[in-house]
Amino acid sequence: MPLKSLIRTIPHYPKQGIQFRDITTLLKDPVGFRMVIDAFAQHYANQPIDKIAGIEARGFIVGAALAYKLGVGFVPIRKSGKLPAETIGHDYALEYGADRVEIHTDAIAQGERVLLVDDLIATGGTAEASVALLQKLGSVVVGCAFVINLPDLGGSQRLADAGLVPYSLCEFEGD
Image 1 (tube, rainbow, N blue to C red):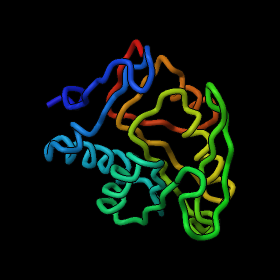
Image 2 (image 1 turned 180 degrees about the vertical axis):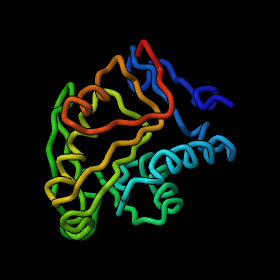
Image 3 (image 1 turned 60 degrees about the vertical axis):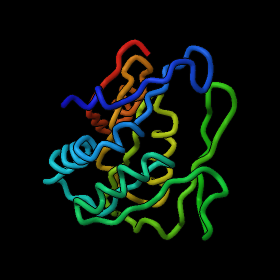
Image 4 (image 1 turned 30 degrees about the vertical axis):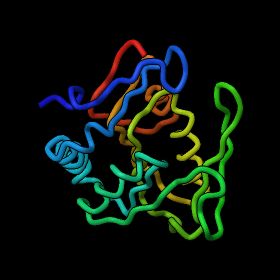
């Protein structure tokens, strides 16, 4: 069963011209969800990883399941103001404005090897900001895993140009 067939496309969401790739249809399918976690686990099985960092919100779902499967810890990367303890943050530019991601200051120890996980890589801004945040804490980012890559938007290339290793399970061209 191809994963792409389990991903719903919602045209013109959240604004005109956007083709939103919705993984909730994939997540509700027990075989499809298992395929995603197993494929990531197999790909990263021989790499030393101490923690999985998942980007809010769908990165939490995939990242937490993968952390369980690999037997490592899970760390949430959240939007500003959502974490209760002491945090550090990283601001980044969006097409129209700015945003901020944050992490607890005690989430990652110096030198820990972290895999960043999210549902989708588009322009790469949030992923790049998340990597910068992880590096501020002294971690070694061993890779970036995404269920979906939208290569035409340049995010995976942006990460590769920064010396990171993006990995995705399926691609949607022409977005």
